[in-house]
Structure formats: C-alpha cells, structure tokens
Length: 394
Image 1 (cartoon, one colour):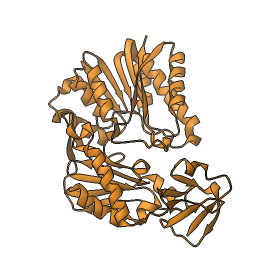
Image 2 (cartoon, one colour):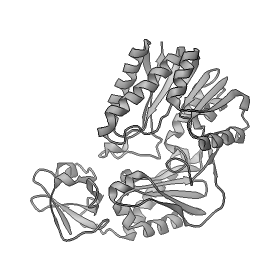
Image 3 (cartoon, helix red, strand yellow):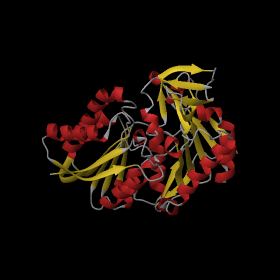
Image 4 (cartoon, helix red, strand yellow):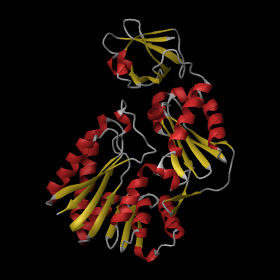
C-alpha cells in the first residue's frame, strides 16, 4: 500500500519531518485502513518513508521510519520504547523525581503516543491512528519494560476525534483502587489524580520551571493564576514566599492543591486557595489595589492550532496586562503558553503589548521551556509547544 505524493511535495520528508498532510497526496494505491503501514512515495517513485495511515485526519500519515527497509511490527515498537526509556533513565531528573514523561510522541519516533510515569503507575495516551492500531503490543511492551504496577489509559483527548477515534479511559494493565498517585519532585510531595486530572494528571513539563520559581520566591508575595493542583504554589511556599494567592476555577483541582500543601508540611496560613474565573479574579484584585512581587501565569491551551492564534492572543494579552498591573515595581512575571499555535516570537510580542497597555516597562531576564524528558526532535519544531518568559517589571 502506497501514498503517492504530488510533484515537489517531498521536501519536508527529505528534511525528515514526520507528517504528511492530505493536500500533499496525489493518490493512494491499495486500500489501507486506519493505522495501516504505507509506503510514502515521491512523484518520481522513490520510497521516502514508512508511515501510519489516517484517512480521517488532515495529517494523513505519520512517519514510523525513514528507512524503507524497516519492518513495522511489535519488535520495532518495543525497540523504540526501550530507547525512550533508556534516555529518561540517563536524565538528571530521574535522580530527583519518580514522575517522568517516558514517551513524547514524534520526538521519540512513536507518533501520537504519550506515556507518563507517576511512581508505580504509567498513564498512556494513544492519540493517533498508528499507535491505536498497535495499542495492545505497545501496552504489553510498556508493562514489561517499565515494571510498573499498573497502566492507566487516558485516551480521552479531543484530538482523537480528528483521527476518527473514540474516547477511552481506564486501567488497561494491572489495577489499583487509590484515586491518587503520590510522587516526589525535588523533595516535594504531590498527589496526582491519574483518572480525572488534566492531561495525564500533572504537568510534568513544568518540573524545572517550578524549581526556578521556588528559587525566586523567598520573601515575595506570590500570585499563582491557573494554579491547577498547586505545583507552582507549593514550590513558592517551599522557597520561602511570604504568602501565596492561588486561583483556579476547578474545585476538584483546588482540593488536590490543599492536599499538596498539607503533604509538604507547609504553613497553610501562608496560602489562600480561591475558586474563581482567573480573568474575573485578576480584575477584582486590580480594582482592590492588590500588589504582588511574583506572578505566575500558566493558563490552559488557548490555541491548539495556528488558526486559533488570534483569539488566543487576546486572552494572553488580557491576563498578562492584568498581572503586570498587579506587580509592584521590581516584581517578576513568569508567564507561560502551552499553545502550539502561538510561537515564541508571537508570545513575546503579546506580552510586550500587554506591558505597553499596562503602562509599565519590562525586561526579559529569563526564558522557560519544557523539561528534558519532553525532548524536541530537531526536524519537528511542532514538538516545542511550551514557552515562557520571566519578565522584570521596572
């Protein structure tokens, strides 16, 4: 079975970009089904790659291998998984945490697969037709190679619908009754809800950034917008913040945040957990004349794709403008975007516009990205979704 590309549309594959879009395809030879392996052919008949076919997605094929002689089978997938796990074992973070991202999709040569480890539980997401086709073989290999007590599947992300796949979640290997997984990160304890939490339960990509906020927090009044289960708040308290105001719209997430504060023996009197819409609460704080020395903004994904960037830009500008107005002179803003549709240059421009409208001056004194267990393949810039700025308010 083959995908024949239009003339001139092989350039991205020659640069080893792993996606083939529907508009690049001249015709399909054979009758491949969702997840089947197909040869991707240039208009001149050259075999460029072996890829997983997805007839319902605009990303019509995702490359397994650029070696046309490779065999895509359970053994191939097991080898890829072994390489991904070996990489994580060598990372410094493996010495400081029992929670790591073990597989990061295309950047690990396993397009559409995400696997996070929380202590003795793996959480797996199958987000594309190819890995869905090989789901059982992947789960068997994961259970063997990772040596965990259980594997929980969180294939409940809406992106699956773009692949023509239904939503699914639940234990798929082993079982356990605990609603929370207890993990350790740089000496701090966190409770992770793998069944109902956002993404796979916790934002492991922010691990190093939480440490940086911890190092900056001593003696500061801290605002934590979109605090989720309190990762940044706990880090700030552990770092010596005088007080922390944490805002989150989800009552369930705030309940876990309170557990996390208590689990670390931190003074609950120094933190206020507020259930509210963050946009509305920031305006209320502005009207009250509240002041902070460090503000952290880690909102959800406003723009999954570039098509949604314009609306997302307004939302990012609004929250950053309000946060900058709430900062005392000399205060720091740690502002993040996890939107793949908002590149780093655009995000910096948005924050700059927010500072201008807020009537303050700011200087970038640091930049943030995802932790090293979320690697980005050089030929796949789309993998670099998380970006952040540390801004000093003059």
